Amino acid sequence: MVNGIIAGGDKAIRKAVENAEDNTTQAWIDLLEQNISENDVVIGIAASGTTPYVIEGLKKCNENNI
Image (cartoon, rainbow, N blue to C red; front, side):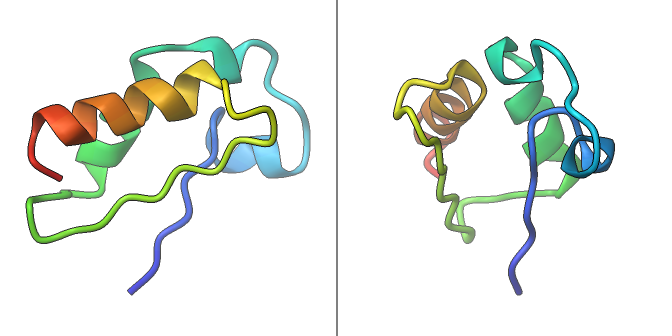
């Protein structure tokens, strides 16, 4: 199964949610809502390679052996 998560939530697909990509804690909250575990793989995609939402979400996954 593949789940897509975007900074700012589903509404951000249609209309920009300002500063959502700069949030350093929301990605982990969004991932926890998906009930991720050590059995999952998380892939982060960021056009710039430096998007805080993506980077910090991946860091939290690493800290939790995901």
